[in-house]
Amino acid sequence: MDKANARVPLKKMPCIQAGLLAAGTEKSAPSTACGRAPGGCARAVAINLSTSIIGAWLPAHGTYVATKAAIEATTHTLAKELGPRGITVNAVAPGPIATELLLAMRDAAAVRALAATIPLGRIGAPPDVAQVVSFLAGPDGGWVNGQVIKVNGGRN
Image 1 (cartoon, helix red, strand yellow):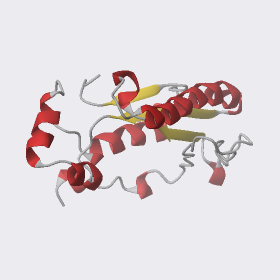
Image 2: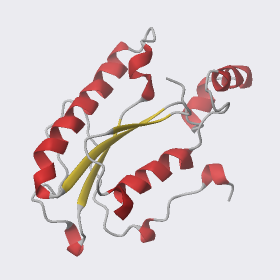
Image 3: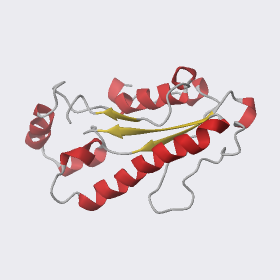
Image 4: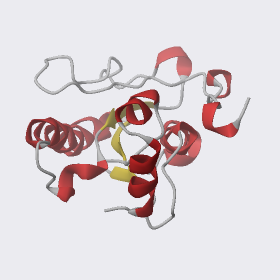
């Protein structure tokens, strides 16, 4: 399996409870909001997904960016509300990632042009995002709370 298609093995992280926020829903808090992690885990986490283009102000992205901005605001609020219960809440904001959707929407020249706008000189790969999520969900991410981490190669 090549690195771009690698998966984060869940067996290495058996005590993860991730809550993905959906803008406009009542089900935005993680199911472990009682403050007790499932299965005797040391802590519970909520990792929300945003986007790195919030500050880019791109035409035709208004609704998408508005919903992701709401997720970021909710991330900060829930981090303060749930932190005293031992629950960390963070968001990951990927930039351009080489997914089937991104590659289906652009020809090779457009992908090369997009990569040229990224200081690290390439489109991100799914493992780039997965490794940040793994860090936040794992024991080393326990002191990170209320943050939006951009995974975008320095694009914006």
